Amino acid sequence: MPRTKGDHDARRRDVSEAVWRVLAAHGFGGLTMRAVATELGATTGLLTHYFPTKRDLVTYALDLLDTRSASRPRRTAGTGMSAVRAALLDILPLTGDATVSNRIWVSSWDTALADPELSDDYARKYARSRDKLRDLVAAAQESGELPAGDPARIAAGAQSFVLGLVVQALFAPETFPPDRQAELLDDYLAALVSLPSPNDGRAVRT
Amino acid sequence: MPRTKGDHDARRRDVSEAVWRVLAAHGFGGLTMRAVATELGATTGLLTHYFPTKRDLVTYALDLLDTRSASRPRRTAGTGMSAVRAALLDILPLTGDATVSNRIWVSSWDTALADPELSDDYARKYARSRDKLRDLVAAAQESGELPAGDPARIAAGAQSFVLGLVVQALFAPETFPPDRQAELLDDYLAALVSLPSPNDGRAVRT
Image (cartoon, rainbow over all chains, first blue to last red; front, side, top):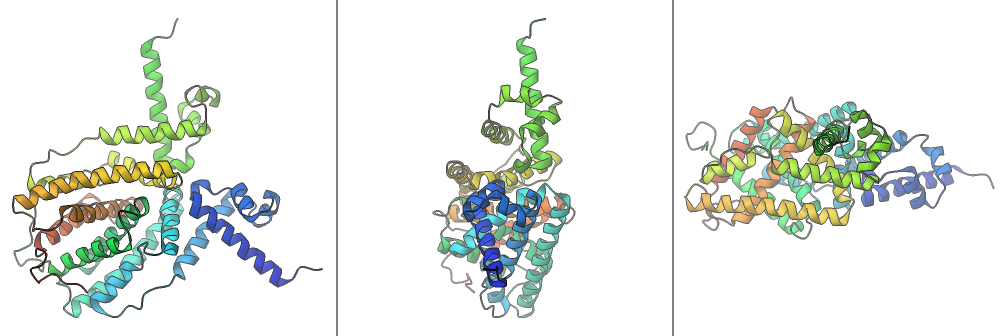
């Protein structure tokens, strides 16, 4: 029987799933042709049909991470502080799927930092993410829910907070279950809300 | 001439330096016998004298990272909030050396997350680091510089903040030069200081 377009698409989905499972279990450090072939129940020979080189496999994996992150489910955002909170919660490993994709993100940092081009690409990704957050922060300031202050600076702080919380939760999921993560994020947001506006004399430099 | 203890120690130092330089440039993903041998100007045959297997090399590199981190220069701490601030500044990539060691730490997360035993080890490391921070937070609360609240919870938040700032600064050193990092940390600390004590009715949940 001739192979159909449907067979081809199904096989591509199988390859994606196999790459994703290898990344989830072993990270980018364990992403090899052999590991993906084993996961797929195929030969490494077949794999080279999809990925002529290891670099092609890594590029594919990075694209897959991007695509899956972009299409992940997100909270309906609301406005003001609830939109800021929703955007930050969307980043945290609060579900099984979000834990896997965060684990793969963190793992990809090793690969990204070793490659200047990829590193720039990651820097741009995080800058875009901060810009979105900055706009949400500015909206929360306009609605009076957040005190005045450079919204880009507040966004940079908030993004730092959630990225570091991701890392800690990945290493210690029992210490940082979803409720604990949300609680810590709410502490962070409560502190932002209570921060005096700049130059009103209450800000403390230690 | 027979080889002396001095020769042996000097060669071990050379090996350490070569491993460190490979990690700084390529991360754990690029840590291979060949890369270290090239860096050392030696054969991979000689390398197997020090590291019979790749796993031995990785274990050595992880120990080296631990040792160098433990012996890194630290700020004289003072007490209260200035001790909290000093401990957090000590983590950030504010110097060339601190940037290299942070870059290697972040890179090691891929290796650590892929290995359950190592992952537990990392979880314990970060727990110890939070415990130290918790004690400093508690001391700052006792001196009245920080409002009341669970010091372990405040420490977990502060550690999240600096870890995430490390990651962002590594990817975008021009966006997060040392002054900017310190400024963002000071914003974070100012928000902690201004946070109302729990249960006084001012804390805002969004």
